[in-house]
Amino acid sequence: MANNEPEKCGFTDLGFAKVDILRRERQGFPEVILCQGKTPAQVAAIFGELASRSDVVLATRASAEQFAAVRHTLPDARHEELARCIVWRKSPSVPADTSLKAAVLAAGTSDLPVAEEAAVTVGCFGFAVERLYDVGVAGLHRLLAHAPLLRSASVFVVAAGMEGALPSVVAGLVDKPVIAVPTSVGYGASFGGVAALLGMLNSCGSGVTVVNIDNGFGAGFAAGQILRLAKRAP
Image (cartoon, rainbow, N blue to C red; front, side):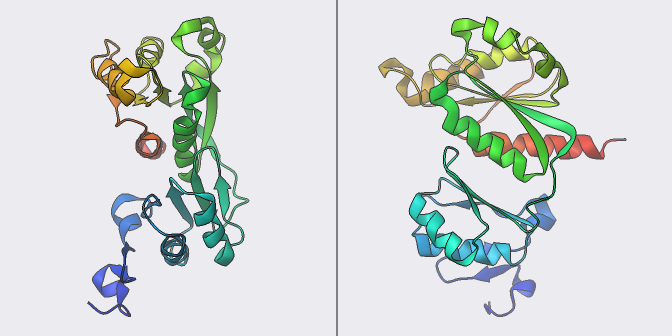
């Protein structure tokens, strides 16, 4: 299909990528760029195409070199270094919607890159995000000290490595959806996050949903969809 008629074919053909320009109409959010394996020039080209058609653009697993290429054409793009994300907004001054909020929890400091990827993704949906970090099961008093947040959030994203127990604990304390993210943090027998994944899949906490290892983006996207549906509800 002709590259100069993207509205008819539903995508813009850049040669190395076919940018889905109808993703927002179908799913409520523009196509998200996975930067891993792409050159800086490729990321910048895809990012620029999406920015010309969207209010917000998100790229995940981005390097400093890829961000530099994006910023060359979009100076107001923002690099969330810990989350390894690039974010651009057409109207960066629009405040987050605080009528509903997500709580993003991390069991340990080593889980922060995955938790931050989730938090940044939820933020791109326009909702408020509260972060609660280093509250793992080795010291539950650290979690229980934040009871008001546990009562006020509408959806929870919980990232944990090691044995992956924190989502079960959170699910036993709240009446909201809990999205569990196993991380690859841990010693040899954690098998790069497989132990945490299996622990979460076998959770005795009701309503725990589990995404793939280190998939903070997937968890944040699901949380954003839940908040958007909740906002639409009468």
